[in-house]
Image 1 (cartoon, rainbow, N blue to C red):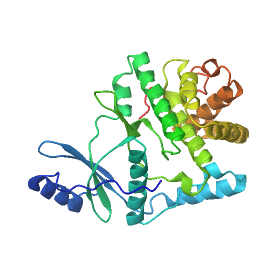
Image 2 (image 1 turned 180 degrees about the vertical axis):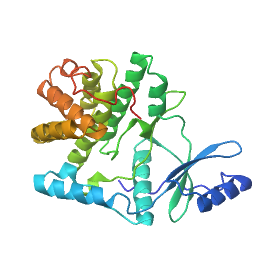
Image 3 (image 1 turned 60 degrees about the horizontal axis):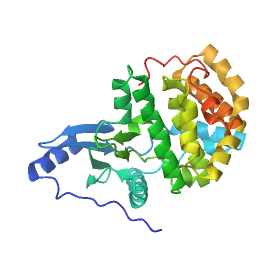
Image 4 (image 1 turned 90 degrees about the horizontal axis):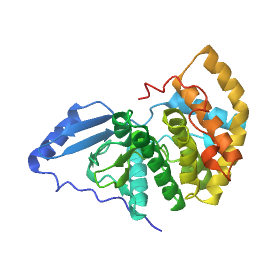
Length: 295
């Protein structure tokens, strides 16, 4: 299927609002900026091009040493090409029936996007005193990623801050800067999606059964190739846990703790495919220092 870029609309912005947007584009420096206009909220997203080069080079070296495609970083592109890449992914999701933000303005180094509503991450923060509601949001995320994978797509960097649920329970996707399909097979890119999502699920869920239920929600909708690829990748990553635990003892960090918890949880779930709900849980995952203060 041939995809076109999502429609770029400037005419939907009144003249005064457009003036404010253009002024903000010139004056602002933050990578993502919220801008309140007369009757709407918009988001300005700027593209710098070569951010995180050292991290990506280190990631490339690690991927080569381990011969593991899932570790390859997405190509670093100039801002114009990063915008093109994000718009192509938005168009592909939109064509498949998934909700993405409307592009209100496109510049050479920035996009102005409509506000889809509160993010899943914000709703989770509000629901910390209601475990069933809080974890229900994580289950919805795993379900929607499974639907995305079944449609032959991937997100690239799924995180609660990149999902939106509006008042009528409609689910939306945000932030498509990464394109793992450019450097790995689709099944690997989809397995990478759920591994990254489990960095959050394994450490932020409040109920012990949630990780298993989230895995089941994803696996029942994802393709068999993606499920098999995730099992292969988890088996490949499991031997790294000893080294990662040693790193965590010497220099504790949230990223390492999340990685350990995600891989350990997914290992148990992959080993119990016939009963994924009882195969793991937050109470069984590696201790996480960010339980109470995850951003």
